[in-house]
Image 1: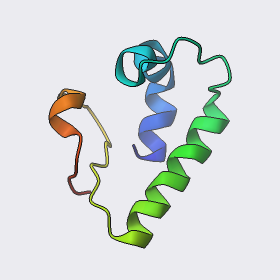
Image 2: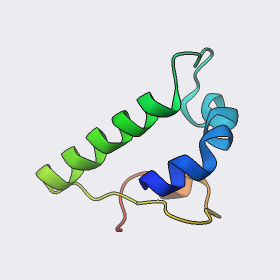
Image 3: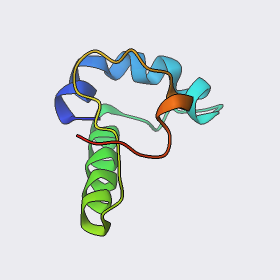
Length: 72
């Protein structure tokens, strides 16, 4: 996710976290930690040439269809 997307959709990300990541407790998921974790993952994808889907704007896909690669 782009930084702008995280800022704009933080509460939706938290709302659906248990669905996407099967987390029971995400109290430690703050806006700051999400931005940092997300930036680190994106950096690693770019560093090692791993394909990724960068969500920036309105997201209409399902997470199952988008797992496994993509582009910016």
